[in-house]
Image 1 (cartoon, rainbow, N blue to C red):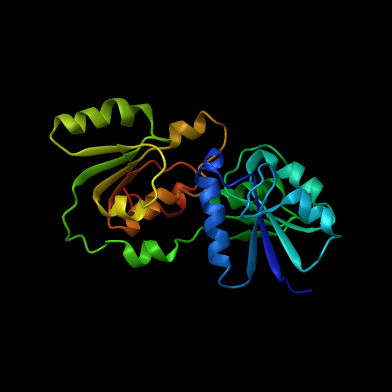
Image 2 (tube, helix red, strand yellow):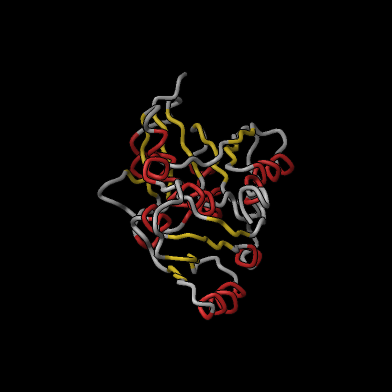
Length: 250
């Protein structure tokens, strides 16, 4: 039976759940909506704009024309159990959470790094490589010509940055007279922020080592490149998928 609806499960969409994983999942739903019907379904927090998992499961028996997408790290095993009998796929961002998957549950891996992890852990499950895509705004508004004035010499996003970058490198760059912006908190217009920046620093290896899971894809360096930034990045985990040293990044 053909798929008529793809439902993306997220815990919630409020500020409480804001992170890269949520942004990617919402972006994927928006991009896929150009091909088929999609729906965001929450399961921890009710939202007036989205369906709630309990209500969806209460309303009817499994429908083979609906595909459910689970993705939220530690919640995945419990969600798959709740959706037993339904068509389910795991949208795998990071690896290293430690759980397994029932036979037959497809893995949609966003990177070769994550694909290799699940190819080792669940070699008989259907495995597909589905890299994250950039939304049209990055391609339509990204300033890649490199001729415009950029007021920010060096951009660093505080979250995930290493202690070396924040405590040693940033002060050293500022003392050399460079305009360095350490961005923290939510930014509504990331395209505009990257367009105003010349160099982008991304060093997440230390952050992920402390959490025991991986950099599942690494969208920020790719977003920065789409806006014409020169990117200096660590190459841990999935960053090595596209971060060719000396060619794509430094």
